[in-house]
Amino acid sequence: QVQLQESGPGLVEPSQTLSLTCTVSGVSSTTYYWSWIRQPPGKGLEWMGGIAASGNTYYSPSLKSRTSISRVTSKNQFTLQLSSVTPEDTAVYYCARSPTYYTGTVRARYDYWGQGTQVTVSS
Image 1 (tube, one colour):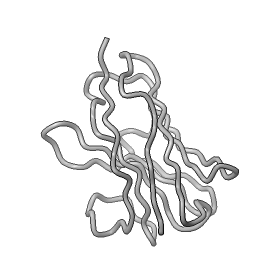
Image 2 (cartoon, helix red, strand yellow):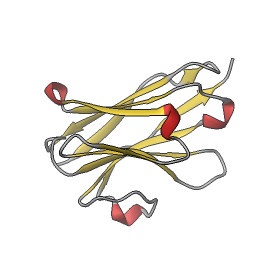
Image 3 (cartoon, helix red, strand yellow):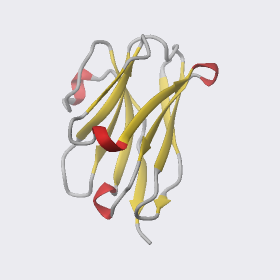
C-alpha cells in the first residue's frame, strides 16, 4: 500500500526557509513523479514543483526562484525548501504522486496524496 507522509515545522518566521519532508512507503520514490502542492487558507490548490523518477526537478515559474526539491534515496524521501517566506506562504502543504508528468492541480491526476501539513509563517 502506497503511503505519503509530510513532516516539518508548523511555524516558520518570515524571511526564513521552510523545509518539509515527504516520506514515501510502499513504493520506491525513484519511480513515478512526485510533487509538492499547497493550499492557502480560503484559496485553491497551487502546484509548486516536482521531481521525476530520473531525479530531474521542475518548478512553478512563479515559485522557481525560491523553491528547491530534492530526493533522499536512502530514506525513500523527497524534500521541499522554500526560501524567504512571507505570511502569504501560510498554507497546508501536500506531497503527492502522479503516474505521469503533470504540473497542475486536478486532484484526480494524482493517485496518492499525503494528509497535508499546516505551515504558518509568522513572527
